[in-house]
Length: 494
Ligand code: FRU
Image (cartoon, rainbow, N blue to C red):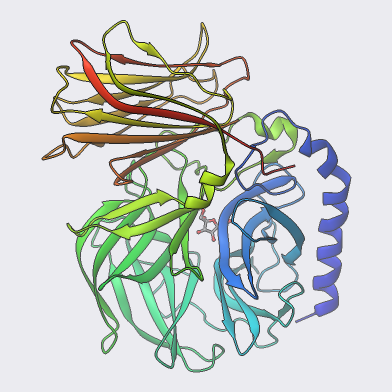
């Protein structure tokens, strides 16, 4: 471990950040209230934690380009998960186990122990034997400056596992023992490997916590594991599962064997731009989930990462969501209540009938807004309806609710002249007579939450500020809208 080289690498990153951040801050596609890096490339959320009275976000960061490259950990702090202050880069590639142009300090978690902040990450390097991933640790007394452990790496891929697919440690404490879950690949199948430790430095393999026999993909990125109510949840980002790219399993954990027995499989988000979600417990007792709002080249709909590279940056986090366990054992994802504090210019309607000619939706700010819609399905006589968002004469994003098929289609083919595609999901309409829909719009994204957050679709939509119209239409007959409320949302970013 060479602390001087690490500091020098961090300084290099800071020089680059200083050089470009002012011009990036003025770029037209920047989000108004979503978390972004000051410049450069961002992907997964890492090390989410509430430490010494503040929320900390770390993130996969390449300050030297608007595309993925040697990974650093960016770092920011907040009091409310909405307004963020950027701190010095926490980790930079600097050691034989994490210094490579196609590697670096990959995703991981933070945990507090004896007053110190520990960051667990995957070192990715290639020293002539192909890419090798190992689990590493760094610590800090002040939560700002991190020192890599001299004994790194602390875990290497066990015999029989692919060393190029052994990554993204999630660490938590249960009783007196620390546990670590690592995404792994054995043969053609994904596994989540469980390790245990008494001191966070010496680790022993416990068991395969859960695995795919092909039905759940060949590799699980960013496994995340947490208790919720009387259950446990395993959340991961599977590779090799077509359009499914963020899943959750709900079940029971057996610590005596290190086995997780699940009974429910669900989708965290069906949209095209929601990946690598990570959870943490906040001081209010909430389980909060944050994800990267984009995706990788291997996803079936992928065409590019959007136009923001032209402005020398790329990537943001989807809105923080609180996870809840429903009575039927599935999960609900709700935008955190802090977002309510950004609202202004409320406009509302109650008990209106919407026909095929449609109803224009008024919003106080056409770029950044929230829309809430409650439909009375028991009184409606229509086979479906559509929301048309961020529309001008040439563009629109259409969200169809097909009430006969019980299907939702989020169609961004005509959204922005940039990437195209449709995400589909079931609507789960059985015994539902009230359908509630929430949309959060920002400069370059639309996030949709239906039925109390049981169905979510997140998409990036690079609408121009001239795409100001929003409306709702019934496909035939009449839709009864019990309540329609919109708010402008104020800016939290610079
Ligand atoms: C997920 C991921 C992780 C990896 C990181 C690299 O998006 O591929 O598995 O640690 O990104 O930046």
